[in-house]
Length: 481
Ligand code: ADP
Ligand code: MG
Image (cartoon, rainbow, N blue to C red; front, side, top):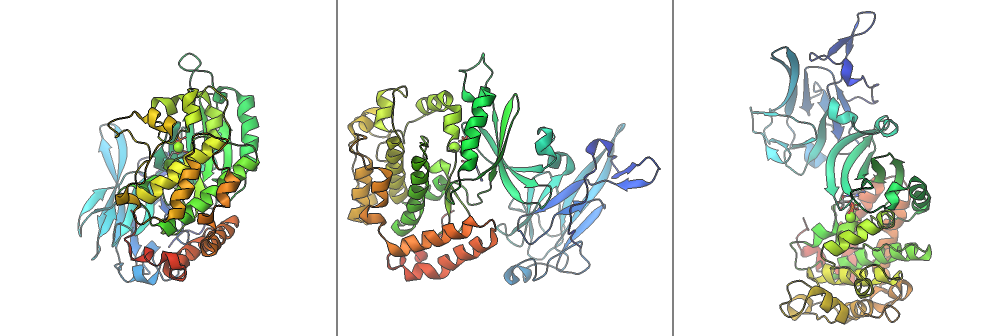
């Protein structure tokens, strides 16, 4: 049986190791010792109070897979009882503790964090472990022990709403973790940024609550399908927590990495979305300032998918600190006018166009126009001169128009560089089929429902690409990891 509703939480500090606590009238109250959080919207959260749980095709399983909650192709490879999750009590001196195992009882295998357990074998299950059935990619649940699930270090206003799950990524400002809303079990990403103390770093906007809230007001009003939506932000003396809509396809950076460049039609679909998002920001007087493939997130793992720009505005919040980090690191995406003034001079939103030019170059070739590998010239010198080339090995098959657009964006003088509106009108982006794909992806995402987007993505991946003449070669290529 799968629970339809989330049961009220019992506080962990009333918990005994045997999973029971005594209420005031001495009736034992079941204690939730773990949760199975679904990786798919049709499965439901399972709150674990019994000593043993089974999952599989059989009706008798606690978690029963049917054609209503998973796709038929997966149902066919699941055993009647595919695996068991067992809680055991261990007595350690005067302390009682519990351990949780997963036992693989399947024909086709159960995987924990993509590692096969093996029939008849047990593995210790820890909080945030991902359970997959039959194949590592078919992840069904994330196991969470109650303690981790509670997110004990969160401020109370977030703790009562969200349960913290696994880490999604980390960046210059802090960690990003997946969280589940306790009601509805909807998934989000939560970013926590630890503030600098006044003595150990420059005073930045994060240490100024009034400025944070002013900035947040602006960020919260932004509504564009290609910009990460900020759900809420909580400012505590030590940390700023930001709850964001979840992007499940990872970073654009990881899509490019290990390829010889993305196919041009796919790049165009991604790039057009970036341009629309940046135009939206620029129209509102916001400059991103930190555009790079790590800050472009993908909705899912489909080849054709919605992208969203993240980390915008935050660069404004962290201000001096972000700029400093950029200079400490390698300024691969930084415009020449910023380098010239070491980040202290006045510059315009045209800096984003430069970064977009580098991103477009990187998407098409998996290489950088200005690189630290150049034997003759330093990176800064190359950027300031604005001289770069399109090596035949990387750009031989790339269209003339794509290369022309890159040149218009990687123009050293920001006044001569194309503006975002000019980029939008560039001949390379005047491609009705591509625009239709993007507009459909975006329209769908404007609604809150995630389901149809996945269907839509699948539709394009299976059919629509065939209709786009330029995309014909794409579907033959291997999927990017
Ligand atoms: P930073 O300012 O520290 O660079 P980011 O917002 O870029 O922080 O987040 C760091 C990483 O965390 C991203 O590169 C990405 O891998 C992951 N991440 C951030 N936001 C989300 C999100 N909304 N959904 C999924 N993963 C995210
Ligand atoms: Mg980032």
